[in-house]
Length: 272
Image (cartoon, rainbow, N blue to C red):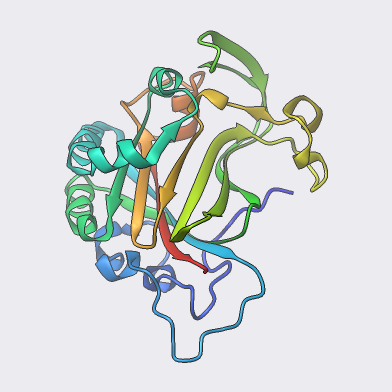
């Protein structure tokens, strides 16, 4: 079943981001997310006993006025591309780019600079979530709801433009994490955009896509190695005003003043 992580979910004393307890939606991003918020949580003298491996993450959703979308080019340019190339693997880099998805990789010391750019562009934090993933298990993070049927066109990993009629339902990121043997404090995170079947069960999720009913956008999936204090920022390459492209549905929010959605995913802790 899809879990929609709202503010405060899984807020445990030893796992929480300082910013997760801050003020609610619509607040300026720079006022309540500092460098310390992105840093790994510090263990006390008597840490809680865990019987299984888990990975803890913070997820922040920001909205930027569509007219200021160019700020993302500045952000991508300042994040650590060389390190990202070593740690990040795309299912299909050509399809990822063709679908107008972009990603940047950063470390805790880079955050203030990124936050300053978001502030200057009118960026606002609209959602905060704390995500606890057991070893090898996946959860779906809601991106947007589709209240009715519509057509969508996207580039698949086959290199072709494919179309589908979707909705009502949701678009989500399926996130799975697992530790890496021989690499202490490092995990591999798999991220897959998809439209989950609304009839999905714990059993059907383990079945192939056609049996489970999920519509998986395999061309924009990726995985990367992460350690505590590292983050990635996912967003559009450019503003796409339509609602028939994958980037348009994932990252746009229509209204009197259109905005662009970006997702910041922070690694907080990897259990030993």
